Image 1 (cartoon, rainbow, N blue to C red):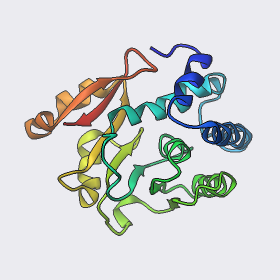
Image 2: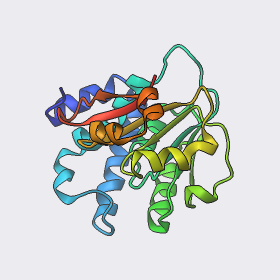
Image 3: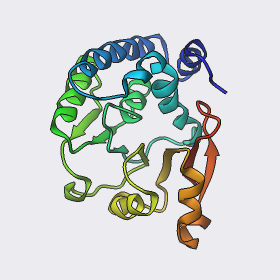
Amino acid sequence: MIETEEQARRYVAEWGDAAAMQRLERFAELLLDENARQNLIAKPSEAQLWQRHMADSAQLLEHVPRETSPVGPWLDLGTGAGFPGLVIATLRPDWDIVLVESRARRVEFLENCVRALDLRRCRAIGQRLETVDPFPAWVISARAFAPLTKLLRLSAPFSTGATRYVLPKGRSAAHELGQAEKPIRDMFHVEHSLTDRDAGIIVNA
């Protein structure tokens, strides 16, 4: 379990090289600066930025097959302040990452970060997901985007038989999955979060 900022930094560093960590440090600076102007993350969580946000995002890589090359982009729904999608893009700059975010000010922030961090294979789409032209996604992630059933319905045009879902759902993970219809319950399960012992990540088999 990751319980301190130092543990979180060490954990994230295991997923990237020195250049990736430098980019994440810069991202943290940009985020904290912008958080003074718009509410990107809760103010109390600023002191736990690496545990609550960076490591919480990076841990999704635990649930993505390592032995296969990406087939299509990683699609992050409702990216907000950049979690988890921008963190994944920073750790894996050779992957195609698509960030979908409908709020204009947050899209502007994401685009500024993509430029500042020189993430050439990452792009932000400033639209509601329903209006985005579908494409086959390799991974679909979402943090605080929509309830599970609605999320699966909205993301269905981007999903293939091989798409990997990694959905950090916090403390509602088990409850949301338990409330879903049986086909969904059979398809997904809950993995424990490394950053919050009471939180879970919904993933498909």
